[in-house]
Length: 393
Image 1 (spheres, rainbow, N blue to C red):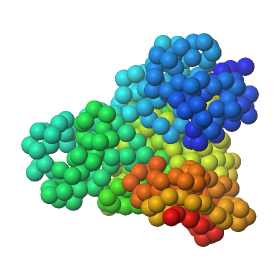
Image 2 (image 1 turned 90 degrees about the vertical axis):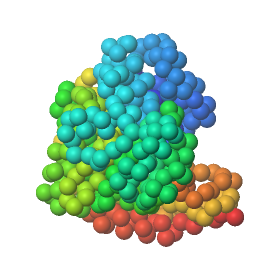
Image 3 (image 1 turned 90 degrees about the horizontal axis):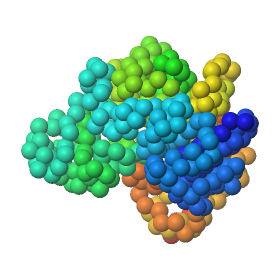
Image 4 (image 1 turned 135 degrees about the vertical axis):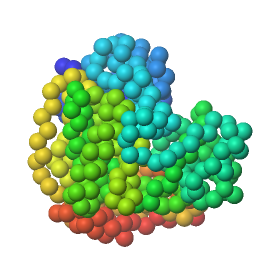
């Protein structure tokens, strides 16, 4: 029996833990949260931070792992790369892991390899910001160098707003460095990919719904994409270019891009499965491809078999509420009874503080549905949302 280590045991990693056990692997999970949702699902659990590389390495050696996976979070990708190099298991090099998690190094790689992407400026400190702010071609997006889930991301329309945005983005930057990018107007998509010995397998293109300016928090996704086939082919080509620019040879990749005036341009990518239940739920619901199984097999160096078994629609919609204290969420059972609805999940307990949506952690829950088409799946989600009542005081 092979042993797989899952970096994280939160709600986003639960499906990886379940899947590993389902297909006959011994599953070890690490998480700094001793109450993590997946703790009791794993064969063994260790209360260790996923970014404490030395501690995770000790667990990996003790448990004699054959592979390592993570879902939805970026920084553990670096930990996985260390395990790969130290233990000789499949995975990324540390150099590639840095390019895949550092937004500044990533866009520099895109630029050097002529991957379609926005114009950008690198701001290393406040003095640097003051010297450059008049050079930015507004509107621009401010991003912290290292973070995910839209944390610290903000739109800036004019120079007068830039200082506030700089301070906001800097709060989320571990290094204090900020990436400033040209703002791209157009549809936004993600591309769900698994790489096998340099071969890029594109499994799905996902249409994305966000809150829009200024924070662009993701509030929904659906598959398959509704974009024209010609544009989808361009998207696939740009995704493959970006993956090769970063140097990813094996493992899952979650690629994000915008399509201004029908021309796909990279936003960023993650060398891991996408979050927001896209790869754990939407891909298998729409295509029949068990992406989580493929990722686990790939992490252990096994050959992949990727037949597309079906062609349905799948969608997810997130819900939130007014700012205040969360009293309860009702109507979940009624929502689950609607045809096509597969899951209704809550992320926040009663008594939690609810704020306006600035990043993905501010969302209260979600509905996941399947349908005969993407439109049908979205409609099923929206019917379910009508039944859900969020009571905030």
